[in-house]
Length: 568
Image (cartoon, rainbow, N blue to C red; front, side, top):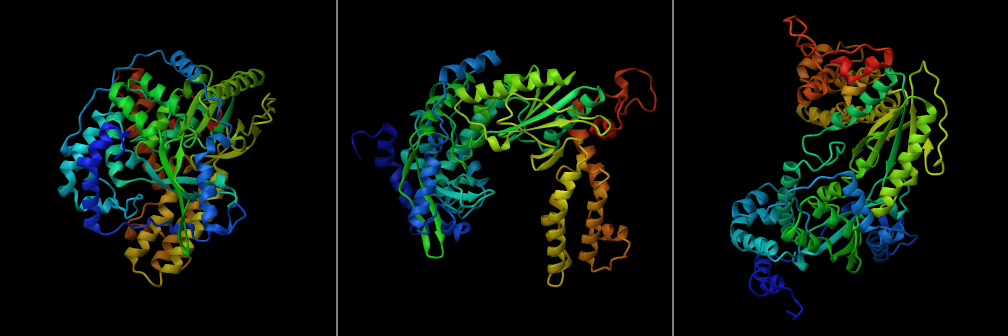
């Protein structure tokens, strides 16, 4: 133990942490090297090298210094705080210090997912759950000691980073997502801190309603409804509307710690909690790791000076706090719909000339906010769609920022394929090959599995694709193709021929048809979101048979009938 150790580190090394950690390791045997089996063969695809050690070093250098690679030196703390305070002039209550209890610790560990993956110490969640009674008291004391002394143990800041492929070219390191394997011990403390912070945010209603990502109780319908309803309502009013879609490059990896801490302070996270988060964010150590047929290979430990660990419990909540003031930048003239780091800005005005002015102003405000917060737009995902009905000829939009914005007819938002007519044809065309592959899997396994296993395959590979956003695309004229493919899958499951009538087969298997599932999704969304609807009883007090029904406004365009409000 060196003289420069903090009080908590001295205590942990001398009296608690070392003995506690050793006892757990001895109980379960020697340390194990974490597995990264998903990266077999990766060495021949990255950085023009076949040396596994060089690949691991190349990955960790890219992930650790990604903020520098993206020219992320322009974060301005003072201007970021100024934008935040000007947009949201609210004084928030202090996050009250609330010590952990032993019951909190036991409850947190018991609710952790059983996983065999572990951090550098080799202790997995499964190990921790098995010996929770033996370690609860010393572990509980260390957690409270960490909060009291406002620091996180340096031993708990070490992360193994696994590169997970996302999309596009495999030889480009930017197409990989860094997933951190953290210590199970630190995950417990993170979870308890997450519960405290989340409670504070919910009580004070800090998170903006325009953000739909990482929010408990919010699903795909909540995200897509304001998007489609605004578009169709604007078209029905003969307004001009466009959707501006933007994506922030590597936002989780380039979060500026100073700006994040200042925003936490603005939202009422003061005192010991703010100091603890400062300790949590600073001086984290990362090591890249990959696996090949020849074994595991890793880089040296590097210090990360920006970003939040992808894989931690606090990551989504800290990210939401960081971009929480983003919707305020143009809220008065546009309607933002945000899902995590994917943003859709709806601009609806009276004519095309005004639309061009508002889009230019929105892009300017977005670039300004990103600049002072140290973030960068992804130029390949900056798109705009000019929405229209088929009866109205769309005029071309002249935008000042055409060098970074591409006008398109369709794009993907929250896995749904949106087009300028909102007829969902592109989405269904994209969905059909996936469902066909699921039918092939069912046919291939039907000869070897019983009906119970076949139903499991159906729900895992077919049904989950079918139910995603069905409340919106389920009434499309193109949805009959999906329904026919569902009938094909049902016949394959039961071994029936092509001409067999499917209605009794659905009943025998207990599987809901596509039209029925669409109706169920609509009614479920209605019951969960009654505040979105106006009922006939709002306009009169007469006891008529239709007074409890949803009020349906008049419409000028047939396309408006596609809106969710008109169908329930």
